[in-house]
Image (tube, rainbow over all chains, first blue to last red; front, side, top):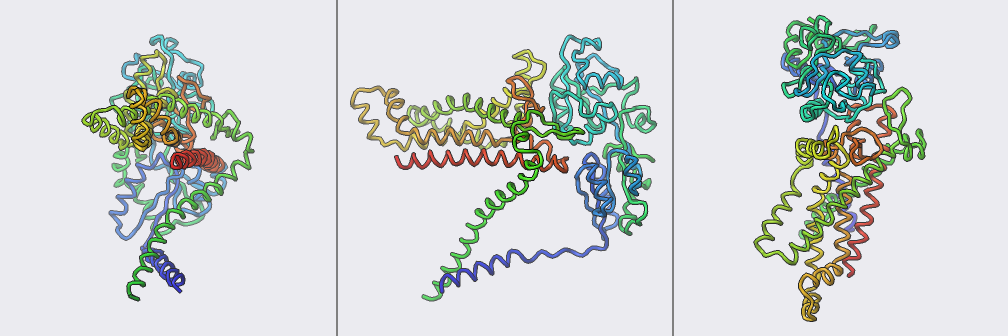
Length: 269
Length: 288
């Protein structure tokens, strides 16, 4: 008898803890899925969007460009986010890209480094281990310490695809955030690394690439070559839901451009 | 009377639920890790996975060999134990037996504080001070290395080793020491030849606890070890089992993600072994 009683109480208390969470009704939801590099940009835009339309809710699932494109294809989200252009076969699958902004990737060295200008070929040679000493580039006799990001990172993906060094980079260190890369390069006079342009500060020196300094203007006019697009991916045939369409129009509007700049990317408009 | 009984039963029920939460969590984690970790191992092959020397998870033809991570974790932990155990053990003998009350209070306070410092702070200081320091001291191009990780881990495991050894040493009956002193042995002789052997199971448990902490640490070592998936070298950039999971998890997908779960499963098995060893030593120390 006592055991049964204890059991009933246990069961009822358990049941109590499990109830009490039912979904809140909302007028519209916009779900986005994809690139982690776009986190800052899409976060700022999502916040501003929800402020403007208080009855809408906005979600962002940071899974990576590839997964985001897959998700929109399978209809698991409204808008996919990609930090690379769509490949031809993805376009053939009925997907459309709309470039939201561009992001420059700065090649950074320690401020003590005498090198100022570099070109894409040389960068590729350094990262593949063909050039291993700064003296080959007219610097001190010191081994080059190659710093990069972890496998799967959007910045690494962008950098390696532009310099043509996919999967052949010989990294001394693979760090997991832009901040870590900048700190490490600022600590080591022989290091070279890459980081999103927006994050670069005066702790490190951003190199000119082919004589062009990375800046908002040179990214915009395309003269700074190490850059990648931030892309919104949608389906050709299916219409967006009302909420998603509103979000799409909002982020492509002039109103959103200063927000994108503030988040460190270069708006297309 | 009856009312009281009902109240008792209710309280029992609540305690039962709370107790079940812990058990449930452990079961859930174990089950999930096994379910999530097995598929990738089956796809890659157990031998290729455990003994493959190359990890290139995002390459066109990916390879998923975690031997570098396993060896790094073992070497790193062994190194940390090699440095941390003598320091921790001697500190605990000093604190438990030799130190005057005042010094003991100060040092124990410092040890407790060391235990409370978050691992990311260890990592940060390692990154800002230790890594450039190693670079300059040994004149190598980059200081982020297995050595840096070993030093950070050695400091991190000190509190566990010291606190547990002190408890073991203090549990040694006073009569043992009195007998030894009465026979003419000096205090230091007594501590090392009587107290320490009597507390050896407890001290062994302290070392095992230190191993457990060192092998499970992720954040601090991630910030000082460089994270390139190389076979371990004292001055080379290395990646541990823990950091292999942590560094790639956020962007991973498909088989790469499954393989990360498999790494977590391997790590979990390591920890289980260490826990079993710990329980063994603790049980023996109680029996003594």
